[in-house]
Image (tube, rainbow, N blue to C red; front, side, top):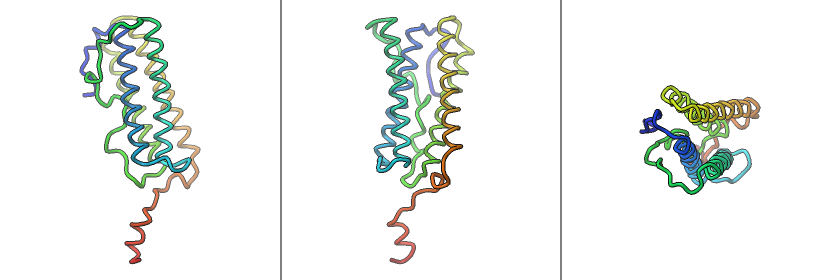
Length: 175
């Protein structure tokens, strides 16, 4: 279960905190993947994940600023313990030889997962201001899905090929 919150009881502040935490979780996971795969060259899977981490950080910063503007330093009631893998890519979704296309597919799945989360949460939200924010967040995730789908459609054929492990190739060829 991605969240253990009663959405019908969330305040606007709680919702902003929840959205910020979702972005933080995704940022941390994408950053982990980028470090694991390395950011050796433009267009590689590691670079895709670093780009996604940068986007998640920007969105999280925007939400946090909005929250500070509205609620100052009021302590949050929502924590990372209240969510799990709402938008963060699945932990086991990377492999060392993954193609750029596969990395974008991982990101696409994550954005679709976040859209579904906000869409489901809307069914339980009662407060108009919270409902409006959840609709905004869902619509932003839908835009992210469209953006990644457009990127995938424009990838060159070379982006669809998994990276060969030179050591593995040598072993299979008997060198």
